[in-house]
Amino acid sequence: MRTIALFTCVIVAGFSVGAYAATEIVHQQGRAFSAESITIKKGAAVTFLNDDTVPHNIMSASKGNEFNLGSQAPGTSTDVSFKEPGDVQVICAIHPRMKMMVKVTD
Ligand SMILES: [Cu+2]
Image (cartoon, rainbow, N blue to C red; front, side, top):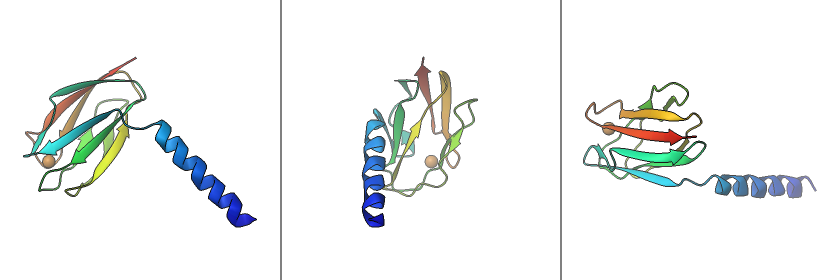
């Protein structure tokens, strides 16, 4: 019985992740973001996909939307959801030339 309950929990968790699926994908190739600027709605997620040949460290210090993905190996991706409306400056901590803006609308 315990096993069944645990299994049900996992299924429910899986569905909730699906409901918040990322709406935008930002690629990283040639040590650059695939877009200079994207616009999303508050609460939406962006998938940061490192399809480059080197690691990247995507982060933002913009108030209300701070995040730091740490070192992301080539071939990996991470979803980030943005909670506060406003312009979010996203950078790579390893490559100073990598910059983009996520515009979060209310
Ligand atoms: Cu980088």
